Length: 95
Image (tube, rainbow, N blue to C red; front, side):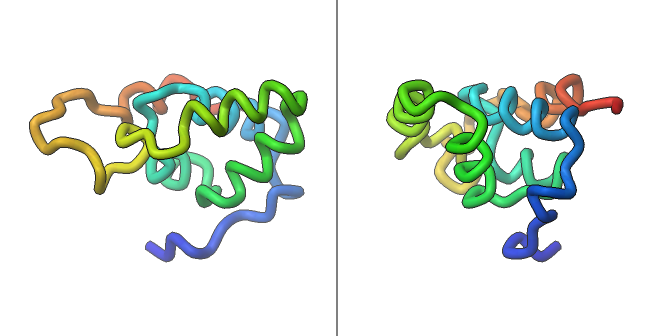
């Protein structure tokens, strides 16, 4: 898997954009899971959130996720039993 390659944001369906936004707001859904489900890397998630949210909502989201260990698998405690993949599965757009 090449994590530095991402789908073009313009190629995403409205359902995929919605799924990215929902998963990005969820504390325990990692950026890696978003990439696996939708094909969008962290930098593009940030671009999507900046474009789709109001400026104040974007600032609140960035403040919330910046440095949050649950948004990156590599930073998580190995004892953490929560599987973010299960959360992301029900968020995948069907359109």
